[in-house]
Image (cartoon, rainbow, N blue to C red; front, side, top):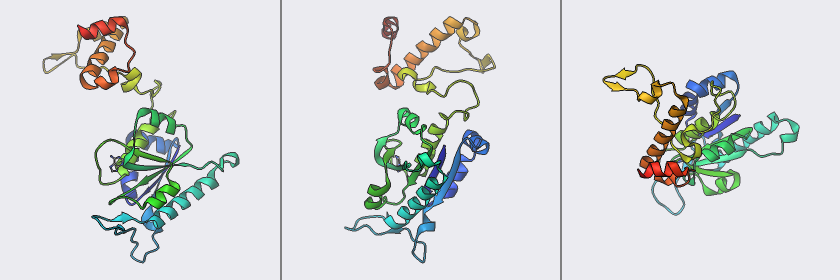
Length: 248
Ligand code: ADE
């Protein structure tokens, strides 16, 4: 997977993703990441990339020109690096915006199949609509709140997509979304010591009885989901016994 991030703050992207699990995958070459500075594509003598909004109003708008040129430069580079039969396929361009479709594990899974992804990070009051219409394929929000820019959302998406790519996680277990398996939240986890400040690890986990452990974990998942995400529980596949357990 090759990530290309169009941004005014390349160091934020590079520093954020060059650590931990994504950092190791980048080192191993399973992932590649480049941050393209939109400011480098300004034709203004002060490298300006924003301007006042037509029609008035607060804030500044990122101008279409530098964004378009940064995109073109990136798309051209991707095209050159592609093996010939793939060269005509345009890479998806994801624009991070609170007005987009809300990011979800299903979207991460779909995007993990791509060879290249371009992320476009906005700042100020947004980007000139005309260039968005020309280049963006996906408008994505990471939730109903407003951030100062698209960099953190891009990093969130890159993290979620990357862990689905074979070789990125070092365990053998598939990166299926543990936490959202069958629309249930994950059960609680414990490690040594057995007693921490007087609090015991649940007895069943020490029993060595695999069947009981599985049943307990499933029940914990159901309880957690009922408490924290009743909206998910409606979509989960519960057995008749589990439905009874939930009512009890
Ligand atoms: N840019 C600013 N806020 C955002 C959000 N919630 N999701 C995606 N991009 C954003």
